[in-house]
Amino acid sequence: MSSPTSFLPLEGVRVLSLALNLPGPAALLRCRQMGASCLKLEPPAGDPMALYNRPAYAALHEGIAIEEADLKTEAGQQHLHAALAKTDVLLTSFRPSALRKLGLDWPALQARHPSLSQVAIVGAPGERAEEPGHDLTYVAESGLVTGTELPPTLYADMGGALLASEAVLTAMLRRARGGEKPEGIYLEVALNASADWLALPRTWGLTQPTGAVGGAHAGYRVYPCADGRVAVAALEPHFAQRLCEAAGVTPPDMMAAATHEALAAWLATRTRAELDAMSRERDVPLLTLAG
Image (tube, rainbow, N blue to C red; front, side, top):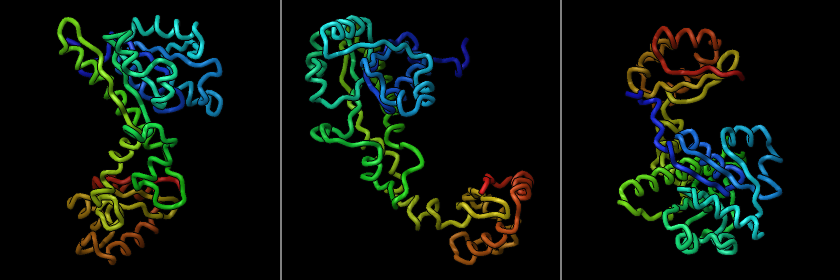
């Protein structure tokens, strides 16, 4: 019997991608990690990411077969459709109008390759799929850009990649239940929807400034310490109690301004080494960081 860690849910599945930049390649990487056989067709100019961040491109395409195909030419189209005849799922990230120009809209694909499924990554769903946008605009729309600083990562793109790989799994589950002649299905993944999903904790108020994990709880914050910073995650009452006992703060009303001030004053005098030792001794969740 194989162990759970060796289970590859997409083993034997063939995925072909035409998607460039980040969401599509990240989704294809996830599919490969789940056991799929992955092929990517790139235009003659290549993937733009290979130009502006070669290490990221290399990491995203590890284990991915890459071939060149100019889909605007007859030879490129023949190359593509020969590959699609042996493909289970096609991954795209073009606008719908671009897919139609290439003869890759869903009705055309379904007519030519009935068993093929398509996962189409778009910026926004439905009629908004033609709108220009990027990760920053989708994240801003979801309420995750709260000032003028750029977000620390590409939330919509990476979240969309996970939703796209989930859609590949959905397509294969559908096929497994489709009988002797299963038909492919079309699934759309919108990047703004992935940002909305990631933003739900903020929408619910959890990460708003008044929320327990938004800064209102004194045990769930990032504080300066004597030689750096410390990310404290003593949210549950027993963790908060241990932290306050170490700091000599009683009673531990974690929402009170006085508790915030007392913990901040105590942490500011402790080194990272001292805080790491306290964390181990008292079983308090925290992580010390360089300044």
